[in-house]
Image (cartoon, rainbow, N blue to C red; front, side, top):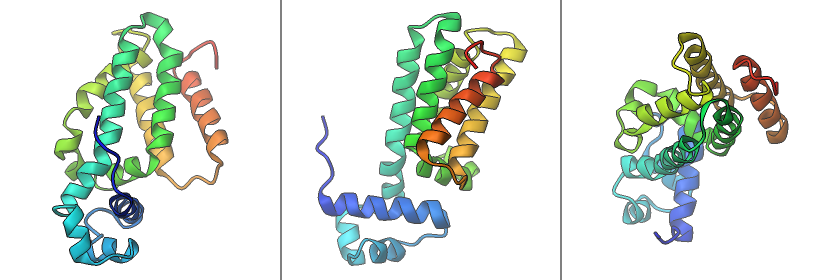
Length: 182
């Protein structure tokens, strides 16, 4: 198991996450990150090879979490997968809302990033679970609407406390999917 990052490394990552979410990846320089982290650019470069290395470290946990979620959902069949898929996906989106905001801000460039290479197949697995394992077009369309809607909502600046947002995302997703628990 990898060691947790040093306090300075974590501080740099937190500063970069805030700045990338606020200004975009392209709109943030290494000097901006160093200033936000209260360190020199040389210190930043001691911890990271560059801005792309910082981005990779920030985007790897959400990608790995999505893959792990897909693995857990794979064991569930049909309609059994819907509610766990919705609640797990909303939880993941809430946990990584700034990372999602970064991805959406520069979507074409971000989808080509190596840390996100597994995302398309993991999203397909999630859609399959959200659709209740159905291969019918209406169920798959609703599943993709949930995936996009949750991601866009958590990446936005909706003024809602996290628990209200989580509850409404789950309720709205289940309603969109036509699930009886909605």
